[in-house]
Image (cartoon, rainbow, N blue to C red; front, side, top):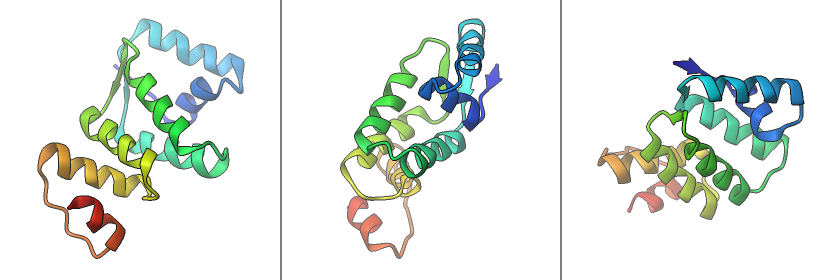
Length: 121
């Protein structure tokens, strides 16, 4: 199994360095590839804050990435639920992940963050 770091998967998504994007695509075609939750979180941050990409586009991109045959997103159910929350809210993605853990896996989340608490209800 191959694990992608944030930079590698961003090159694939953004297609801003064709040689690197092609290398990632080649790996995807040959191997089962894992994208850890931490990498998803960093990708969301970079796409939002550095590239100024809208939340809806980011959510759609992650959803489409999860559909690729050789791509496995760690804790996919949690991540995809978090993407739904991220798309329609102003919460940081890490808070959206916490909502995902609560709603999909039944975890209790202890927080003092009022916006997060409202999403957990």
